[in-house]
View 1 (cartoon, helix red, strand yellow):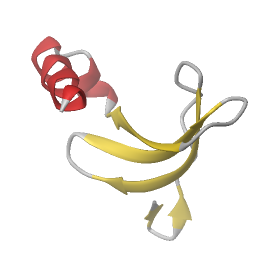
View 2 (cartoon, rainbow, N blue to C red):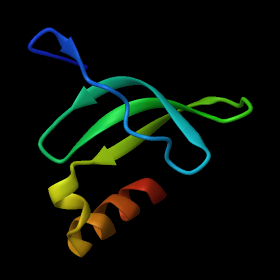
View 3 (spheres, rainbow, N blue to C red):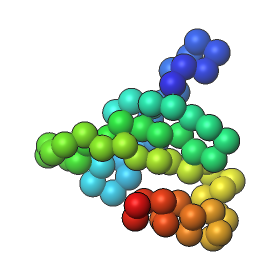
Length: 68
């Protein structure tokens, strides 16, 4: 996502997924277009902001959201 005209760099790969392009960002996380290394369908990956990634309640809520 562009922020003040500058594209944000992708975080390091997450597990087997490469983050290709930021789709959006909000107060809790950014959402990236990702793809499994070696191919496969495109997926959306939510990357929590660092200060929230250490909060067990936030992590639990995100895990619940992923199950839906």
